[in-house]
Image (tube, rainbow, N blue to C red; front, side, top):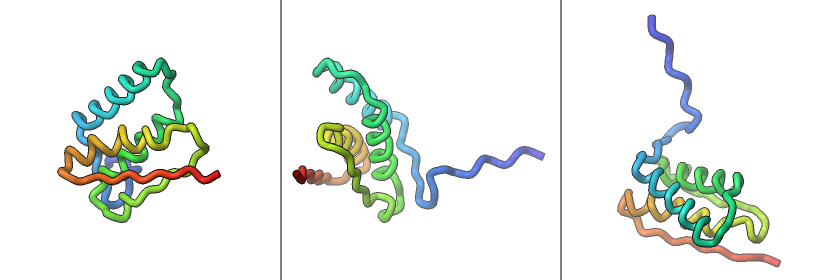
Length: 102
């Protein structure tokens, strides 16, 4: 008897990001870092992955996302690098709104 597949960690409505879209996001992040001579940050990669997975979900509730982090952590870049390729692949319009509260 074959072993059961492990449960999905993505939950209901989950949809994996297509490999070409994932590669586009990863390439864009590497190019963005290189163009500014920045080092990659684990927290930025986590934000990018969280955003891409949320936007890639088939569940509209799962696509509601807000990330709270300190100024200068790269939230806007994470939203743009992840959301633009996913939106383009799914034929969506995208609005990103950010603000800094002091």
